[in-house]
Image (cartoon, rainbow, N blue to C red; front, side, top):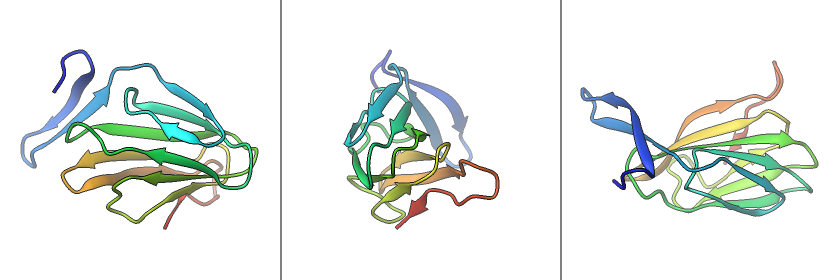
Length: 125
């Protein structure tokens, strides 16, 4: 693990998982593009129907990443390079978010949050 780039904030020695939070600046992305691995948070502004977002494989087991849909101009489809739970995560409503953790098998979903009370979560397909 690279010192200064990542910081462990949670350790559960009983199951052997160390959550790793990148310490880089948060990313703001508008429209299609690559989600960075250097910061734990990416804020996404959709600009059309199905803006394509990509997420590369993590660099450290336990690395965390959160993507939040903050401005609704359509929808966004996040495609992690290696995704244990499916192939894509689709954001359609402001406030929806997805948090994943990089494991030996790929990105796994830790949480999904609905944008509005009573609305759907980001869809995993």
